[in-house]
Amino acid sequence: MNRICEEVQFLGVFAPQEVATATEKTSAFVDASGADVVEFLIYTGALSSGKKLTVGIHTSAEASGGSPEKVGDAEFTASGAEPGLAVVSYRVQGGRGRYVGVSFQHDADAGVDCAVAAVVRPAYRPPEDGWKLVV
Figure 1 (cartoon, helix red, strand yellow):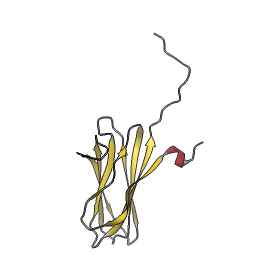
Figure 2 (cartoon, rainbow, N blue to C red):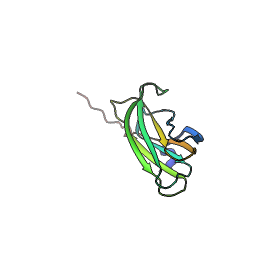
Figure 3 (cartoon, rainbow, N blue to C red):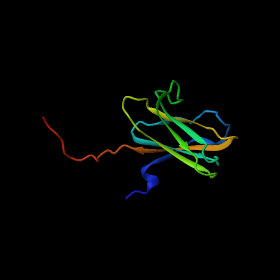
Figure 4 (tube, one colour):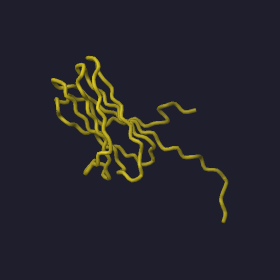
């Protein structure tokens, strides 16, 4: 049995830094080839109760995230003045770009420290066996 850290890949895609209010920021894009699901963990400093964090999920054919296509979004509302964690998931789809990233912004009254990590889970591949189909 594998440990969780052996089952998934953790990637830092947006280094911790202060993000000004109403300023959209974009993470680095991760390679989703061979993956089943990519989850993004968006960490924020304290947001006042009722303040919002808006997150968009984007795909691109380019590793740099050029010409991204928005494939989903979510809005999170702070319920207290504590640091927050927002989680968004993207199930990999064959017709979309190979690379996936997120954009986000908050509406706090001042700058807030933010960071983003990506968790990539590989698609299940059954083990090879000795059975062969001969026609």
